[in-house]
Length: 178
Image (cartoon, rainbow, N blue to C red; front, side, top):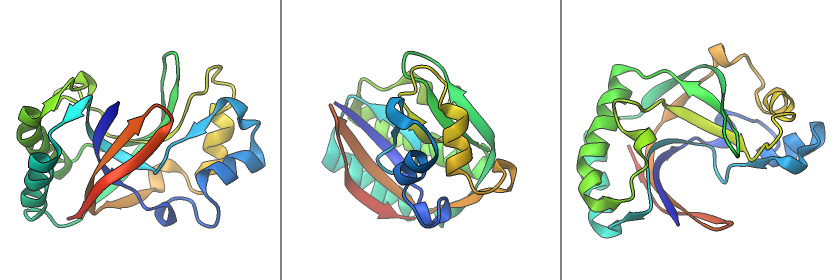
């Protein structure tokens, strides 16, 4: 099981008309690709989380923030057994501070925290597609999904959500508006 604290990115801000999977299927041989359940910026990922106390902390923290503008700096790929295609998000001071506060509030409630999301090493990003074992489809997927140059892409960080993944099932426990 994997749990993540994320900000959901509304698909209307990114891919007008079709869902990400429909766009990929229409342009690419996408058998090796999986799109994400919901496009999102991940703040933390962990194996377990005390849900009630974490939701209370997120509710309290969200009251201190208005929506934040996120800006994309470009495309990227996290390599590995299951490469991930991302949009890199500029780590502004406001995003950095929110991330540090989330980490400080939720770390005591979590076990098995993914160290790649620790404040000193975290690279904010929006996961687009993953499971491209050959990296042959990544360029096609990027062309299909992104209607404008990534340097021109901005989005609104207007929520905090707790997502889960159990084997092939993904979902959202709760979403809190900023």
